[in-house]
Image 1 (cartoon, rainbow, N blue to C red):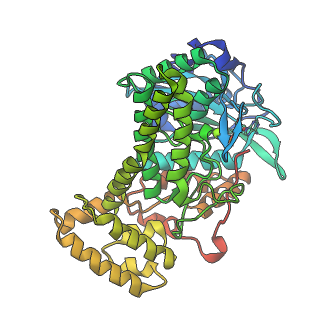
Image 2: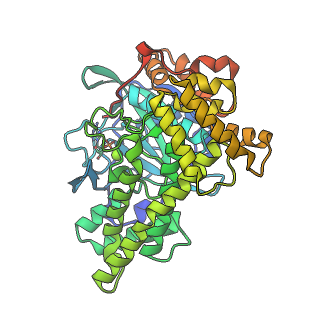
Image 3: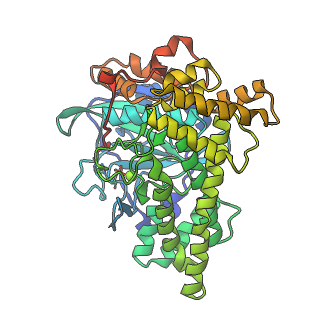
Length: 479
Ligand code: AMP
Ligand code: MG
């Protein structure tokens, strides 16, 4: 069985200063953790060949497949608001691009594949925990219908990676519409490399936004996609955790699953990331964090806008100022459906926010409350049931005015409110077992999370919120 990956690379046609060419660094003793069969098929790669000895060598970075042109990409970014002129792929190698059966071009990247010229002080490696975590959470996100990078495979490397303690090394194969970030534009803008910036913009328009005509159009299109993306995150209680400009992807996919988390009990100021002590990227701050990043994107595009600089600034500012309205509309679209409303009214944001307030006060489980709406189980989610009962009465009155039947309303809710999300304590459990060489909990969780909108009776334990002693309060970066 020979592995054939139908590479068709475009990023390597960009000028040399966009990347460094280098091969992944081989690992000691690769062992397969998982191959994603559906995604392999979508990419036109035989999953059995990917799981073969030859495939394993490729996924581990021990062998460069035919047609690959391995590179580490250059980018910059603001991290927690502080400018870093050079970041870049410090622990990732882009093997190349493949156009899938759906006609979409995607990057295939190894993450944890050894040092690069952008590694700074890092070792270029990843350990098994964050690799399993990214695999589970990104695939769950995809199953939830939210744009995201995906996981094609995970392999254990047989090497030891030293973090707070020695840990098993691993490599994730990440698939993305591209790895171009706001920080990629910032990299060239900060160097006053207008030619590079122009080439990058043309590449991005060709690849992701063929209808866009120039930088202002591109800016508007990215703002629209990002507004919808963040609204969708909010709709499933997702906290990205590190919304730095290098982690805001231009194609509008969720990228960089580090200290991210899905909330159990709802609170708007919830933070999980161990490094986000100020709560900059708390659940409820995500729209503001995004608009901040979009403003950096607009700034980076200014040199391409031509004409007077003041006029360019005015136009770019006007585009950025559209974000709050776009976000409000996207948020209402998402949350109205969650409570069964298909024809939102001006007063509905108030109704939704009242529910969220009652949930925060009552420490209600975010996922299970929405899933249970309309059934007696909803009120059981609340510490203060009377407050919920009062809200429920108002809600039922509002629903009487909907053009849809009760059955249709329930079907709408069931199609957008998942029964299953990747809960932190279950991810931790799967990682602990994985470290001990037992991937059964990982596989079970993967399989269950592929169908998040179904009530899977045999997976009832995975739908339950953590017991007090199971609560995970902090999540960590993949580094
Ligand atoms: P991230 O936190 O994944 O967004 O990464 C921020 C920057 O740190 C990027 O330039 C990464 O490539 C780099 N980085 C993260 N972990 C490592 C590591 N273990 N070795 C080298 N570079 C790393
Ligand atoms: Mg990053």
